[in-house]
Image 1 (tube, rainbow, N blue to C red):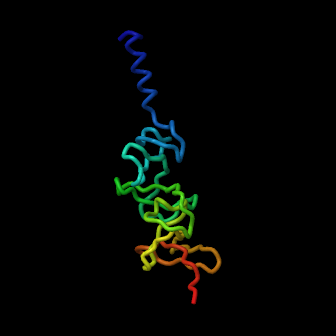
Image 2 (cartoon, one colour):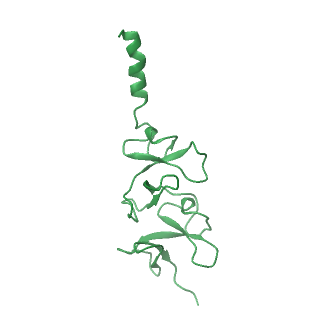
Image 3 (cartoon, rainbow, N blue to C red):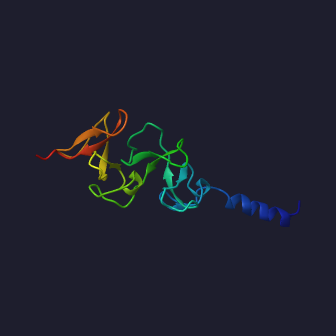
Length: 149
């Protein structure tokens, strides 16, 4: 094989390496992300766009950086430390992916879901006066405000 034929193959090999997009950056596939991260698509985004996020083990509630470990809708076997949406704690939401990092979208039964800080019921930590209430199963929870009379 001549050098002229080998050069395009070498360029292609380097161009296809992962690791070009940093954590949180826009991506089309996991190949675009740094090693160990995956391209996570949020339901409201176009099918070809996602964001690079770190994977977490299923069953994990909070990641080391206090983000929520969230399963992908498109690929339920893949969970990521979700970097968060734009809605603040206490604001209305339709899905957890809309809430800031470290929060769940919670409907406490009044039909108006809001973003609430996430907590791990195995080691519940909430701000003073709030309690870690169960979300689903035994471990995930959300910090519920004190009941008003």
